Image (cartoon, rainbow, N blue to C red):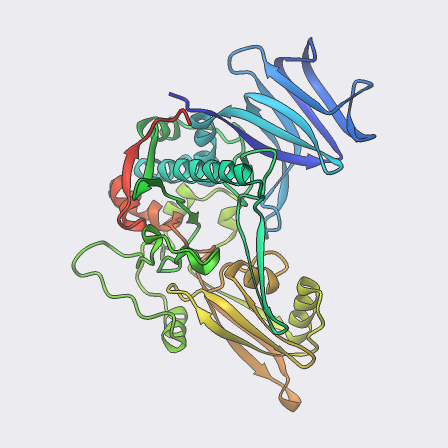
Length: 444
């Protein structure tokens, strides 16, 4: 069973070049080879004619098309462009003065690519199976959200709550796509078509878990995942809307046995600081290069300090960065003060104290975006200041824990669990407390 068809947004640009690698039909003709489309006069200019929409449908089993200049890792430190190959239908539509390339394909085929794109196909099979269930659950939950929003005539996106002149809270979620179900980058789930060599272990993982999703209280779980929790996972409400999901409660990322140590109260500043400045035992606390090479794609391996990390900014660098990211001149940055932390130690409200302006910001992604030219690894950090004259710091060092928002499945932790022989259902129920694994009717 391949499940329902979904739509994945790949590229959005003024001009898109692609290659039809086998025969495709479009506008009553058969086409193969290199093609280019451009936005012109409110439409799609192709072969001398203007269209509002173009659909290239495969005419042969296994037909594929190549898209050039696909940007991956958008706004992350490893952002780059690739040529990527996809199977299924290519649909081109006009959106806000640009052209969007959309891939239409069955859910289960999409998942095979996601698992290969998110992590290496050489990962342990039980981890790949666990990730297949998580990715499938998340996808169906997002499709349900999109349908619900459409029924209510609403759109998703980022949400802001301005509390006062000195505080704002903003969070970003993934249901801001209006012409396709999900995008192909980290904003949703990495989807790189058949660009990565798909090994039989990935196909086996998806097929072995066909139709399986995580459910809680009769609803499909909004199953989130991230790269490395830093020793403890985070709750949903720390990162997104103030909504509590019992299956996304904080979990200490150590063996689920009677000897499992209690997690410190990381909402308390002194305990969070001790936790972050140490390196407690955890599944995701690994420097095993053999294991990491098995599970991390090449660009992810460029990051080696994901469990505990440091970044140092001079006063000039930090003031310029915050001014650029917030469009506000804070003057000299005098302090960065954690006001509220989640249960993994991630800061959800941070006060930026400047000589000209002071503001408390949140939630975790807004903090990470404000304090980095790309994205800070996580908002679980403590701050050290190097003081200069007249009480103005000359530099700030951020010492942090983890990589990503920390909610749900910890990819590195789950992969290590798979390497140590844990079954995929044990992995899932370690990270999603109280959830059930069910096989659903895929014809949504």
